[in-house]
Length: 168
Figure 1 (cartoon, rainbow, N blue to C red):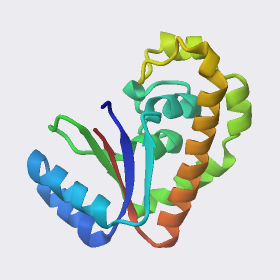
Figure 2 (cartoon, rainbow, N blue to C red; figure 1 turned 120 degrees about the horizontal axis):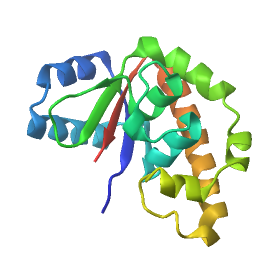
Figure 3 (cartoon, rainbow, N blue to C red; figure 1 turned 180 degrees about the vertical axis):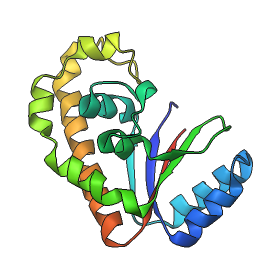
Figure 4 (spheres, rainbow, N blue to C red; figure 1 turned 90 degrees about the horizontal axis):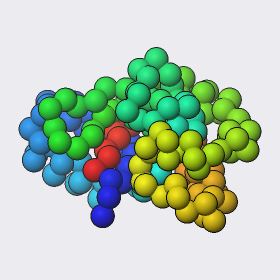
């Protein structure tokens, strides 16, 4: 199966509920799953979250940068502590900075210097970096996910929502 990243737009009410659940893991994941089923505004970047973070920031997700809006775009701002999978949220007041950073990021230039060996050395998830014949396909997928992420954050900003990130 593997670790898949999903991004949902959540309302003020849902964010408040999420915060009240804290680290009640079972209830948290049931609630998040229900929201995913109901939500029309969501983003699934499958297993490419770690490499997308690497392309955007130069480091893998093990090095989350709370001050970098590009890192926040992939990993959220506030992580839920003491649970086995990764769940974080980003409140609406952070979204304009994330949208601006994504808009200003030169993805074409970043992909020109993309290096499968660097991904392997950084031990990025998923472990696909030995398949050099698939490099163009991987770059296309990164570009697609980046464009989808930009569109998603703009839409969430427009509807005054918050973002919920789950990697599990």
